[in-house]
Length: 211
Image (cartoon, rainbow, N blue to C red; front, side):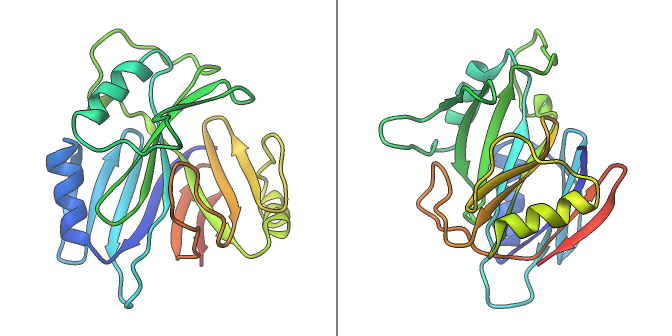
């Protein structure tokens, strides 16, 4: 599942633009008073000004080269405060064969850097923002995880691994919806999952408007 474009909403547009461009050194490809486009490897993220009094936040994972997790951690830790779960600031998922770390941006978006070791995407140079390959996960919060899984299966997306009535990954190793039940606490965060609108364009599926 290739996530080609992702539109998210924020109440802190200027703060996010400065954070991603100036703190992380990523490419802001275009901007207006109401939105900006952030190039995340092969994925275009659009942050759009929220028109309500909500303060939306999301979970988004970025895929990095399988052999560059340690370098990516040093890169991130020199720019942001890494999130912790107990005494850990990284994790290994044995069932996914992947390493992850997490941090939050100024709007509270939970950003994950993940190296999937089953993907052959190694490189041999020092890690930089240009080595972020694509968005590979987007959190999808719902009141009914299992019925949402069924809806996604009807449009051709498959379950990926174990699922429950509070958590379900749908898609494949290259791109996933991470379905979680509303009010479930996000991993490596104290924030409880809430439902906010988003739009996502998936190669071969099209654009989905959610929330």
